[in-house]
Image (cartoon, rainbow, N blue to C red; front, side, top):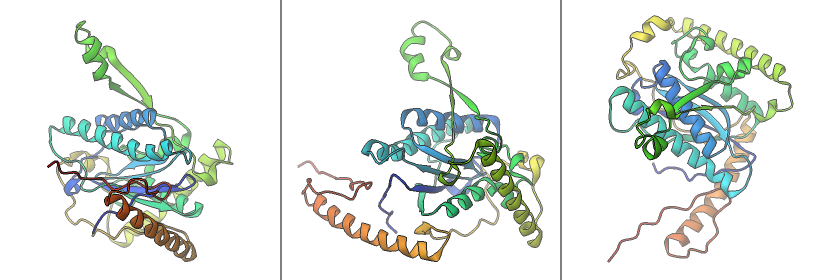
Length: 309
């Protein structure tokens, strides 16, 4: 199936999931992996600012949510540019860390619009407790992989470091300065989801911790019902990053949107179909050479392939 056209709107939030190639455990928790992910996100955020609601890595896939800062073309473009830079830095960093080559992800981001506050809150809690649901740890706080938990639960913004190799090659190599002299520090500051913006920081953190506890209990009951236990940190540490699940979950179709109500989903479907009509009509004219055609705001023109004669 062809990829969906991308359509980003200023006052909308987007949830995304992306898996590693062959579902390998390439995001298995260790400090180097956490720093690679954190520094990549911090660097991409400095260059292409976006709102990040959460950024959580399970053992072989990531959950994220983001939104543009405004409806300006630059801020809409930043959603794509941030993802491109972030994914590239993570892939290069982990390939070097593990001594591997090739693609890190099996597909592009499965990006889905979240159409209401209740669904966005639900998606947030699901992303943070995902390692609990999968039986890797008992509590979200115990997960040592890259997680939004600490910042959302306590307000602590973590800092990450990287070597600015471009500056070192330009200035340090000639003067024989060590790469350590070109270490930079970045942080990844999350944006509160829209329904929490009016709350004080203490109330946001208290609500987040309560919702996490409730979901952890549901995860525990679900594991017990399936006769499954929790792997725990010792068994988790023994896994090789090249391993993959013995019984991987079946791939499910991407939903058209995330909505807390059937009515909201139906309303979105009508809006989406109207967008597709406009988009494909414009694309047809664009590919015929009518380059002045207007595309729907927040969408992206298809690539042109020219053959030199």
